[in-house]
Image (cartoon, rainbow, N blue to C red; front, side, top):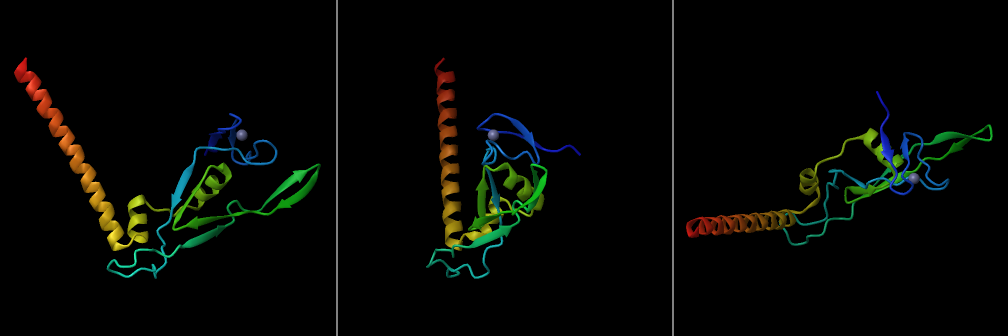
Length: 157
Ligand SMILES: [Zn+2]
Protein backbone atom coordinates (compact mmCIF):
# COMPACT_ATOMS: atom_id res chain seq x y z
CA UNK A 1 0.00 0.00 0.00
CA UNK A 2 1.50 3.31 -1.00
CA UNK A 3 1.31 6.29 1.28
CA UNK A 4 -0.89 9.19 0.26
CA UNK A 5 0.87 12.33 -0.93
CA UNK A 6 -0.21 15.94 -0.95
CA UNK A 7 1.07 19.15 -2.47
CA UNK A 8 1.27 22.20 -0.25
CA UNK A 9 -0.63 25.30 -1.44
CA UNK A 10 1.83 27.55 0.37
CA UNK A 11 5.34 26.22 -0.28
CA UNK A 12 4.50 24.00 -3.27
CA UNK A 13 6.34 21.01 -1.84
CA UNK A 14 5.09 17.45 -2.23
CA UNK A 15 4.99 15.53 1.01
CA UNK A 16 3.65 12.35 2.53
CA UNK A 17 2.40 11.06 5.89
CA UNK A 18 4.48 12.40 8.76
CA UNK A 19 6.09 15.22 6.77
CA UNK A 20 3.47 17.66 7.97
CA UNK A 21 5.55 20.68 8.90
CA UNK A 22 5.73 23.50 6.37
CA UNK A 23 7.93 26.32 7.65
CA UNK A 24 9.14 24.84 10.91
CA UNK A 25 6.13 26.08 12.83
CA UNK A 26 2.84 25.27 11.19
CA UNK A 27 1.69 22.43 8.99
CA UNK A 28 1.45 22.48 5.21
CA UNK A 29 -1.79 23.77 3.72
CA UNK A 30 -3.85 21.66 1.32
CA UNK A 31 -7.25 21.88 -0.35
CA UNK A 32 -9.98 22.36 2.25
CA UNK A 33 -11.94 19.24 3.00
CA UNK A 34 -15.22 19.10 4.87
CA UNK A 35 -16.38 16.28 7.14
CA UNK A 36 -20.02 15.72 8.02
CA UNK A 37 -21.48 13.73 10.91
CA UNK A 38 -25.13 12.85 11.28
CA UNK A 39 -25.21 12.15 15.00
CA UNK A 40 -27.34 15.17 15.83
CA UNK A 41 -28.49 15.46 19.44
CA UNK A 42 -31.50 13.23 20.06
CA UNK A 43 -33.22 16.30 21.44
CA UNK A 44 -32.72 18.62 18.50
CA UNK A 45 -34.01 21.61 20.43
CA UNK A 46 -36.93 22.40 18.17
CA UNK A 47 -40.58 21.51 18.13
CA UNK A 48 -41.37 18.55 15.86
CA UNK A 49 -43.69 20.47 13.55
CA UNK A 50 -41.99 23.75 12.84
CA UNK A 51 -42.44 26.60 15.26
CA UNK A 52 -39.05 26.92 16.88
CA UNK A 53 -36.68 26.33 14.02
CA UNK A 54 -33.36 26.59 15.75
CA UNK A 55 -31.39 23.46 16.33
CA UNK A 56 -29.26 23.33 19.41
CA UNK A 57 -25.68 24.24 18.51
CA UNK A 58 -24.42 20.71 18.74
CA UNK A 59 -20.70 20.48 19.32
CA UNK A 60 -18.67 17.33 19.20
CA UNK A 61 -15.02 17.17 20.06
CA UNK A 62 -13.00 14.38 18.52
CA UNK A 63 -9.82 13.72 20.42
CA UNK A 64 -6.52 12.42 19.08
CA UNK A 65 -6.76 14.27 15.77
CA UNK A 66 -3.80 14.16 15.41
CA UNK A 67 -2.75 11.58 18.04
CA UNK A 68 0.21 11.97 20.40
CA UNK A 69 3.52 11.34 18.73
CA UNK A 70 7.15 11.01 19.60
CA UNK A 71 9.74 12.99 17.75
CA UNK A 72 13.51 12.98 17.99
CA UNK A 73 15.18 16.34 18.54
CA UNK A 74 18.99 16.39 18.79
CA UNK A 75 19.01 12.68 19.52
CA UNK A 76 16.47 12.98 22.33
CA UNK A 77 13.02 11.53 22.15
CA UNK A 78 10.28 14.01 22.88
CA UNK A 79 6.62 13.36 23.30
CA UNK A 80 4.32 15.77 21.50
CA UNK A 81 0.74 15.92 22.72
CA UNK A 82 -1.93 15.29 20.10
CA UNK A 83 -4.78 17.59 19.30
CA UNK A 84 -8.49 17.49 18.83
CA UNK A 85 -10.99 18.91 16.40
CA UNK A 86 -14.44 20.30 17.10
CA UNK A 87 -17.43 19.56 14.90
CA UNK A 88 -20.07 22.27 15.12
CA UNK A 89 -23.54 21.16 14.11
CA UNK A 90 -21.96 18.04 12.63
CA UNK A 91 -19.56 19.87 10.31
CA UNK A 92 -15.83 20.41 10.38
CA UNK A 93 -13.52 21.56 7.61
CA UNK A 94 -9.78 21.89 7.55
CA UNK A 95 -6.84 22.63 5.26
CA UNK A 96 -4.43 20.84 7.60
CA UNK A 97 -3.26 17.60 5.92
CA UNK A 98 -2.42 15.99 9.26
CA UNK A 99 -5.97 16.52 10.55
CA UNK A 100 -7.37 15.32 7.21
CA UNK A 101 -5.22 12.18 7.28
CA UNK A 102 -6.35 11.14 10.76
CA UNK A 103 -9.98 12.13 10.13
CA UNK A 104 -9.93 10.02 6.94
CA UNK A 105 -8.48 7.10 8.91
CA UNK A 106 -11.23 7.40 11.50
CA UNK A 107 -14.05 7.43 8.96
CA UNK A 108 -17.78 7.21 9.68
CA UNK A 109 -18.90 10.41 7.96
CA UNK A 110 -22.21 10.96 6.23
CA UNK A 111 -23.44 12.46 2.99
CA UNK A 112 -24.95 15.93 2.68
CA UNK A 113 -28.46 14.38 2.50
CA UNK A 114 -27.91 12.36 5.66
CA UNK A 115 -26.60 15.48 7.37
CA UNK A 116 -29.72 17.44 6.36
CA UNK A 117 -32.02 14.69 7.61
CA UNK A 118 -30.21 14.62 10.95
CA UNK A 119 -29.70 18.32 11.56
CA UNK A 120 -32.49 20.26 9.88
CA UNK A 121 -35.97 20.59 11.29
CA UNK A 122 -38.92 19.45 9.20
CA UNK A 123 -39.73 22.96 8.06
CA UNK A 124 -36.09 23.69 7.18
CA UNK A 125 -36.01 20.52 5.08
CA UNK A 126 -39.26 21.53 3.37
CA UNK A 127 -37.86 25.00 2.68
CA UNK A 128 -34.73 23.48 1.15
CA UNK A 129 -36.86 21.17 -0.97
CA UNK A 130 -38.93 24.13 -2.12
CA UNK A 131 -35.79 26.04 -3.15
CA UNK A 132 -34.52 23.02 -5.08
CA UNK A 133 -37.83 22.61 -6.89
CA UNK A 134 -37.78 26.31 -7.73
CA UNK A 135 -34.34 26.18 -9.28
CA UNK A 136 -35.28 23.00 -11.15
CA UNK A 137 -38.36 24.76 -12.55
CA UNK A 138 -36.26 27.76 -13.58
CA UNK A 139 -33.80 25.46 -15.32
CA UNK A 140 -36.60 23.67 -17.17
CA UNK A 141 -38.10 27.00 -18.24
CA UNK A 142 -34.74 28.20 -19.51
CA UNK A 143 -34.31 24.98 -21.48
CA UNK A 144 -37.78 25.29 -22.95
CA UNK A 145 -37.12 28.90 -23.99
CA UNK A 146 -33.89 27.88 -25.64
CA UNK A 147 -35.66 25.09 -27.55
CA UNK A 148 -38.31 27.58 -28.66
CA UNK A 149 -35.65 29.98 -29.89
CA UNK A 150 -33.88 27.20 -31.77
CA UNK A 151 -37.15 26.08 -33.36
CA UNK A 152 -38.00 29.63 -34.41
CA UNK A 153 -34.55 30.05 -35.95
CA UNK A 154 -34.94 26.80 -37.88
CA UNK A 155 -38.40 27.78 -39.11
CA UNK A 156 -37.18 31.26 -40.03
CA UNK A 157 -34.21 29.91 -41.99
ZN1 LIG B 1 4.13 23.86 2.84
